[in-house]
Length: 98
Image (cartoon, rainbow, N blue to C red; front, side, top):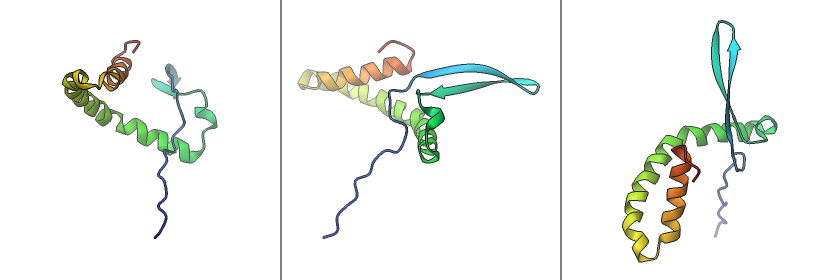
């Protein structure tokens, strides 16, 4: 029997902190986003994985919103912790403290 390889995420490990800065470039301003403390020292593989993760974020957000609705009922059946975790993440995404 062939051993299966464990799939691992290759993006920069968290926690990430989003910080923006407007930079004047040629004749316009451009918004630059830094993610995490070690973005500048990330390998090319990590940078590509970071980009994939960021690109997938809107879809993941939609899934979490749907899960939050389902977990509203499930929290009464022993899933309080999971419900709270989803609510915390959604609050962070929506600009709250979480």
